[in-house]
Image (cartoon, rainbow, N blue to C red; front, side, top):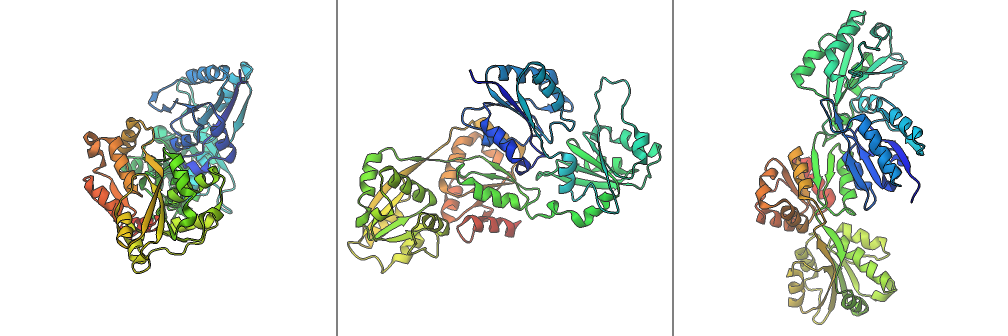
Length: 502
């Protein structure tokens, strides 16, 4: 049996990109992951295949697991010989009860290490446009719990001492006790005009920041209906927010966007959307798999040196083609001197990464665009090889044949629906999605198949963004309306269409 080992990992304040490199590595190597409600669930996509994920989240008014139960679960899973990662919001040792979990492991002789995380006391304040220290304004900051052990008979927070401090005061988990916190500080002499900010769900697309004074912040919070999780920041640094509020000014801030591309291809779109402030949820609706009859396909690939033209209609086609070349121990010399055509710039870039210069990219990135570009160019008897998906539109083949070409289709890969729980998709949509992106007809068809007609109403509050007219046509045939469509049929064009119309 493997030696048990536990990582107590700080997941950061909400934005999944704020996890440390070491924290991410701890997720990837875990056999079992115990995560709480403040850890971004998107981090679970980095788990290794077969890893078990257990939600042990605790809310202020509902404990799914008590702390004692979490401690016992850590011990149980570790003693079974697993590498266990305990994923906690913020930092494990900043009011995260990580010390209690570490003590439990120590007492049972189980090896562990603690991976620090960015605490919301700093991270959420930063994203709210508030530096916790600033030259000539605040030379210190103090982090205080706003939610003490309810079984304690007397508070251990020394409000008299806190009221005299000139540094920034940051209260975590204090929304429910806001009236008591502000009242006690004013009672002990803190000026009622002292600036106060509450940052709700800091570093995420749902971030909302409310500012007021010590005297009236409670009224403002009630008016704006700010709830947990939020941090409370008290001090003159709050006034810097007018100039330093960078995050909430990003163009897609506050938008939650669903990306349906394959897991491998999602990163480009996801990263661009996140850089503009969007909260991105990845739910791949297609998976690329090799075609089933590889022997026949490999024989066709060996004949590509006879081609006058090789047309690639997707990045997936490029990747699949070169994987088969490698599998049958051939390199790019084997494909001969035929001209290379790519349907768009992304496909052209994928080919150039493989060492192939592209001879033609049509002005319009569709099969029809390719046919238009080849009018008068294709000669009768020209041999055209076409490596692409098993299920693809036939108009390109038909158009080429009408020009007199001999077309050799290579159905080199298949698009299948990944193994998904319908419940997962329903949960995502019920939680609220502002925009759903489709980058191919398959992504749209598969999403609707997973969703089911009976749940189609869950899409009515979401806007639909498509990469181009072919995907758009499929979306409309599925009974959905299109809100954004790129003028250029690329990821960049898709994003630009969203930015222009919002």
